[in-house]
Image (cartoon, rainbow, N blue to C red; front, side):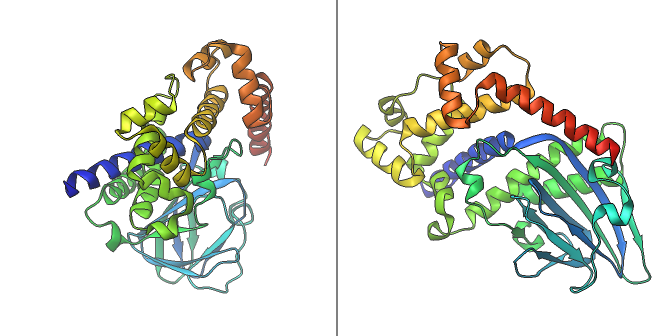
Length: 332
């Protein structure tokens, strides 16, 4: 019975975390392999970019803004989910120029290439992946995460995370025509696996909002909502689906998430709708139906209440911003 409970918890965590990651990212993945011989140091400036470092060979130091130095060894991975600025270096204290200052190009322009610093000391090889974060609506799970999540090679041994790291390493080392697409998918997997590994390794006292995903009642209800946000869910139907009385379900869900079941359902529906508005050209009435609204007017009113903009304006502004960002990257 305990084994089944653990299995159900892992299923809930994987499904909900994966959905949140997919809704959070914006645009394509930026990635590159770095071949760095000491002495070296690089500054990654603070931006709305989630960054993953995978240590392929050697070791180095990572120093987050206003944080403690972290030593990374071969096989380790580190995720900076909120885009905190940081320095990576073979040893702390070195002058650390930015990527632009070192290589004369933006991260977007360098994606898929090898970044080389050719000193005379030991070599470190790392893969760095990053993608823009969508600022709104911001999921409370993402807001509750620490600035830095570090998983050592020993902690991930024999896990899906270790397998994903191996696949990423192989793909980058043997790049081909389909490599960008494969790497983008693997980095999404890494993001999800790192968060799942971190989440399952924490105590409830350390988790904040994230404990809701591990809660057997709230986690099961979250998975149901995420699996079919357009379904006409009610408190009663969710309670029936997780197998407990309505009043107890409502209390436990609200205590775990800080939202009533219907409040969370509404927020998640708008998160899904926002992603569709960014990534699709479907008519508003179609998007409204996919998130449970028969009326386009009711959907637009709910979207503006949660996101702060009407859906048509949100879509237009997002596309303008994307075009401006692409132009800036090309002009850099």
